[in-house]
Length: 258
Ligand code: 5RP
Image 1 (cartoon, rainbow, N blue to C red):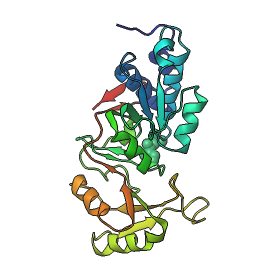
Image 2 (cartoon, helix red, strand yellow):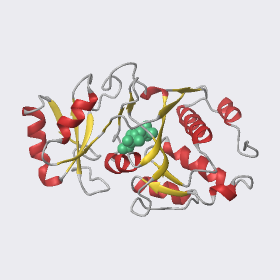
Image 3 (cartoon, rainbow, N blue to C red):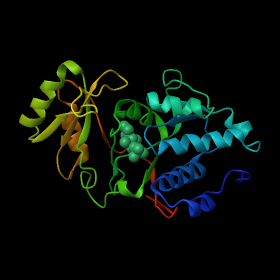
């Protein structure tokens, strides 16, 4: 099969920089190297967040390597939002649209929390709708994250900022009310921009985000369904039965696989 030639070796890189960024880079490089099928994959989803930066970086390295460029030059990358689109272009990758490529071969995306069953909380960066659109259109969904994202049992253990929920702007007060009355959620807030309370964060789809706290989530599938039924909700940050595997980078450059 095909082997790495001139691509930078992640082990030697990590020995030099034992930082959180290196943990993210290690997870992203390993995830791409182990899951990208150069001969079969053509349509590649590129997610959002600070870990996916290194996914795009790695894909760009394949493109520049003469040994792989014949395959990599045929990749079309599907973004999950504005940041992701910029990452694709910055790394010289070919940009495609989900409209043009409704079937995606593989997607690499970050997560805010990953439980033992590979259920996820996403949307910390506000890109949940397009992330869900692309990841549920993909044959394979590989999560890239650092060690802090792994939850031993339930979602809601490490990620204490609540479940992100994308809502239609004119319906946000109604969703806040229904979360409280119907779902007994005592702490749900409209996400506002910095400086504090400077106004609602507006998503790539011109919607708002509500962060709803439920404590530890024993049944994420049920919670997702309950939230999704509320009038005004576009999508929830609970990604259920969607991820294929997850790579967690550690500060020493090692990577754990789930
Ligand atoms: C954005 C997301 C991100 O994928 C998630 O927040 C992880 O980001 P990072 O890699 O920066 O920790 O869901 O909406």
